[in-house]
Image (cartoon, rainbow, N blue to C red; front, side):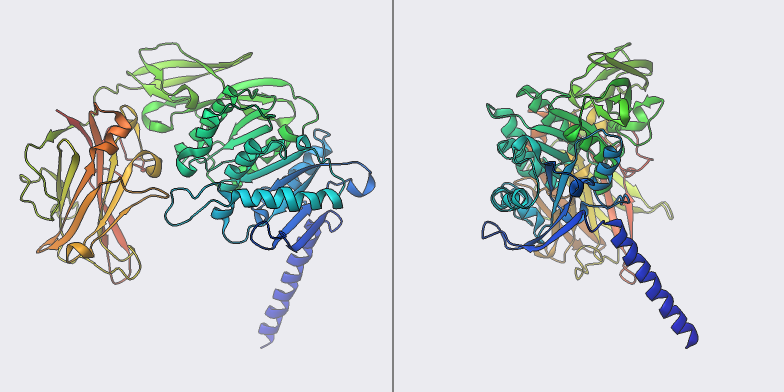
Amino acid sequence: MKIDKVFSLTCIMSLLFVVVNAQNNFDSQRYIELRNFSDKGFFDGTRNIKICLPPDYHNSQERYRVIYFFDGKRVLSGSQNNPQTMAPDFYQNELLKDGLIYPAILVAMNDNGHRTKDLTPTKGLLETEEGGDLDKYFDFVAKVLKPYIDSHFRTKTEAAYTGIAGHSYGGLAAAWLAYMHPEVFGMAGVMSPSLWWDNHLLITKIAASKYNKPKPKFWVMSADVNDPEMWQDVRTMMNALKEKGWKEGINLSYKHAYGGLHDIQSSNSQMRNMLYFLLGKGKPKLIDASVKSILAEQPVMLDLESLGEKACVLLELQYSNGYSTNAISVQYKIENKNIARIGNEKNGEILPISAGTTRLWMSNGKAKASINIKSFDCSHHEKYTLEKSNAKVNIDGRLNDWEPLKYSCINEKDKSVRYKFDLKYDDNFLYIAIKVFDHSVSLDSTDGFKKRDRIVLSVDAQKEPMRSLSKGLSPWSSFLQIGMAPGKTADKMSLERVSFGKKLPVGLKAISIIDTDGYLSEVAIPLSYIKEKQGENWDGIRLNIYQKKVNPADGSNSRFYWRPDWKSKESYYGSGSFVKM
């Protein structure tokens, strides 16, 4: 009993210590919370708003710039940097101590539990989450919140002194609102934006528009080394803005978080750069330049074979006062063009040609830097024949339309065959048939797919050499991943696309059904999907398969791959390649 009392007292004292320190971390004179702030009928009710005033606010008569942040619960950090927040207040304190920026009032706006809907401009293509309320959010900020802030605090009310910032959907929202409403927002902090929304709608609008409005300052950050589409979309948008008259280093700046993920920590890591660009008192001096990989660890030499599609480089420009950017417009030069070549210049892709080493130079005006490249012979790799079928193929859960299946996945323990498969095509479809040998198939669907056996196909239909270089870095953007869980009858099977925010190709057919010694799965993928990636003269695909085997007793599962998991270190160039003959 005595020990319990001591323990309880210790817990209470610890809790008080945490609370006191949390309060001390936020100066009550500088941090103001507006609880249940009304939208006056413009949006979706009340929400909490937190405001951070500049350190000298109460000791001056100055008027201040204002930056509004989405995702208010993950914005302010206080006097100590919390990497789980964007922490503009912490970094502003640091920059103000060095006299590098103009102070700003920071406004953090909480969401109301339906973030996707609030922060997206259209309904979008997702079936699970509808969007489209961003215009209402704009009305709330422009017609309710901003007038309140301007009337209760000393602000510079003009658009040039008003910013909007956010991460992910918030980054998309910030970019959209600044681009569409420069009369309100003259600055935008765009962190790892979800530019894929609604089939890249914002990028399409920028590229197609005749932009005659004032050009707000755009600071844009890319991240997520696990999803090339995310950071490559940012590069595409930056180039589109340049084509519409934005000037690099003047009202347009780009920064990549090397090795960063699509998370708040990456935004935190670049917040100092963002505030310096948006609020800076003067232009910093360029002091150096270097070639950087998109990865966290910067290699001395780019090994194209080991990096695969991660062999992408950026030119970093280093300035005084710890400020840095990545060049948007870059000129490339490879010393020996027989060894390697540039793929997509906007994304800095370096592609192999033959074995050897050479040097890559990158330049942007006066800035110039280089790095060594180790390449390999990409003309030879694993290739299987993809044959055309002269007969009709029925997706019916039987093998009547197939010769004996050619390819096998072997159980390493007893050398038995786990599954066999084959593939072929006709004028309309790519067909794949898989026969799984298993006398105890789990059909338990009480917890989605967690307790259910299934077969998963990965089909990469990119053009060469990208499909052979691919290490599965981004299954949801670069290749098609199809999961099929068998049923006792065709109507009891389950089919899904194993990726976020994507749909199965229109017209896809599939079946997965139990038989006497396991189950059989068939799928027909429309050639229109492949031709969309490669064009009419498509030349092949890359395939991987794994069987997911569940232990119903404990819910554990094992995966049995035909070729090494594309995301693993064991994956090799061109594994599972099938070529039309």
